[in-house]
Length: 212
Image (cartoon, rainbow, N blue to C red; front, side, top):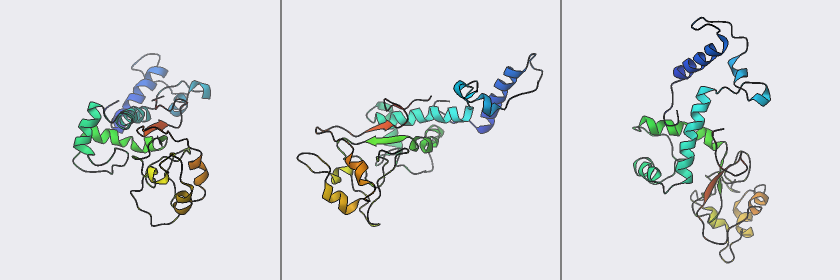
């Protein structure tokens, strides 16, 4: 489940097996299911038992693989997959393509889930595309809006900064960025040393993605 997308029929069969075991006193006899599976799958604090929704749990596990690829781009598996599937891009910018292995297709199925909570943290700003990547500190994160409809698509966040000292360039922001987005951009702290841009997860205190 952490590397391959299970078919929906398989997920349903697993959920049925768990539910039957939970409600049946004498297997394989089928007894009445007194509570909906969706209610049993809620956390205990919400009145459920905490059973996993198999398909969603599968997606969360696959999301962990995608998180590792973008968070640790120099790892061996990330470099191997980059050479095969996204040489000139990143997994989060990659559009759907044909002739991919089922393993890679499974990982990319988790991309919509990842985009709901992932955000790029600005350090150097060189690797973040201002109008495309999700770096604005909102929930969910999103790209900043350009002031005019025609803006260079490859503009990096670094282009919105000054050099010495490294700060946000107020003049550039006012000329190119939607005024509503400027205060949030200026609230972001900028590292003075050179650090690679990283990712964080909006829904955890330490910024790390968890399957939970």
